[in-house]
Image 1: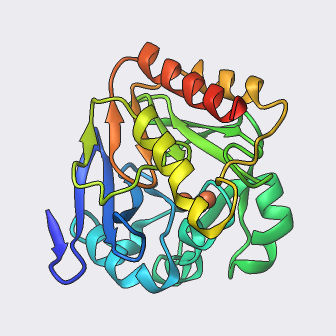
Image 2: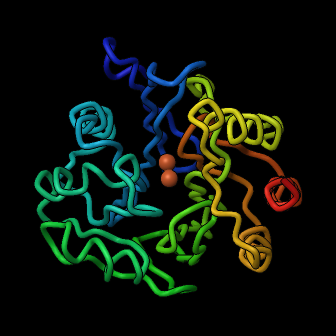
Length: 251
Ligand SMILES: [Fe+2]
Ligand SMILES: [Fe+2]
């Protein structure tokens, strides 16, 4: 459902009670997109806020599904403007909402940046938001930021995978079943090169245990922040994670 004809912002349900808000972005050659994910439950949670200037579009989309003021948690993977730039706008619009992030993000950035104190999540910590059980996984520097972590919805087996499988293009398909390794790898290598910069991955020398941990969650849906979400078998999601990490390591 298109929620803003000017920007092309749209919202679609990609797993039971999980909605992708997608806004196309023209300022990257070949196109790009920013996604936020709304999890509707007794205590609704949004994963990623989008840029501060994108907030009216994201709000408009969310409000097609539920009133903003019902939100309880504003979660994000790491401290960058596309992940959490609109955090304070969300807190303002949802008086009972709190930021939800890693302990490092809380300590280093959010305790200062946010208008209300965050709810820090320890590695492996569970959070019930009603019918579903969420777990926080610390993933420092995967792909970047030492405060980085992810949420896994054990109920729908959805991994909110942030920037890991970043794809170029507008992410027109809300959810795909096709391979993500090739498009993610191509974007990773192609995006920063014209600026004379390395890719967006931190190239952690000991990242394998973190990747293995994410791969072992049994995710059948990957809620990606840039491009399409993905659905398939847990074996395939694990294989894609390991293959992408192998390519990054061998670059
Ligand atoms: Fe990022
Ligand atoms: Fe991002």
